Image 1 (cartoon, one colour):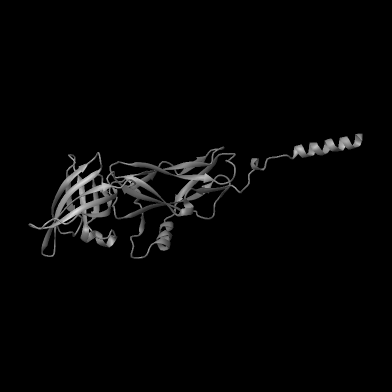
Image 2 (image 1 turned 90 degrees about the vertical axis):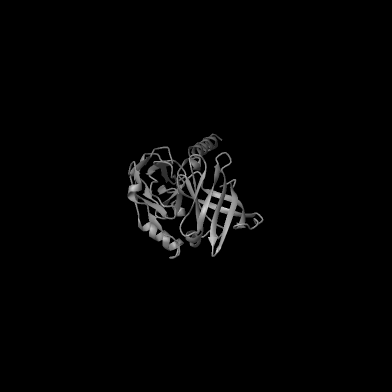
Length: 282
């Protein structure tokens, strides 16, 4: 009996010594990666009315546990990543992404440190919006160059940071307009359309008059509204739209545009009057 008791105690002691919670140990291989690289591209908005915008991308360490030591991560640019993205996602007739001009951004540092006990670190980027064109597609292509410990994830290595210039006026609006044949035709019944207002600069937006909102219609059909200091509108043709005159106001409390403009089509002149009311989720 005594021998049996001693043996039982020994077995229990052995079980206790091996009673480890599996989640206390690393369950995967630790790898370093750029957050979002598996999706090819992330978008960072840059306000036209700012001198510069501070943004960032994140580098992280995979695995079931945080790092148990500091890990230094250096990033570099990979321009070929933009060409690869264009080939995979855009036809040759579509506007292609291009590298953001090097004078338009800078890095505070070329490397960041994921601290022990943490799972990610931010890599800062400063972007200068002056001179960015609303119809160009800009990207900064980043990949990990070196890590001080662990390994770099082999798949999904390049992240494109799309730089999108915006202003406080841009977005999706609902327009309600009437159109009148000049000089004395009766106004039409109101027509409702969804219109996208594209930021052109700090106080100007562009939209397409009545036609489908596709790039092919911008030159012939686009109009711009510039909001002046007194909230009146300066109305202008973007390119070839046959605008004669226009005006209106912008109400900053409701973010609503109230406008009119006249234009020609063939030998006929028209007057359009309407409002643009912002979509709730613009």
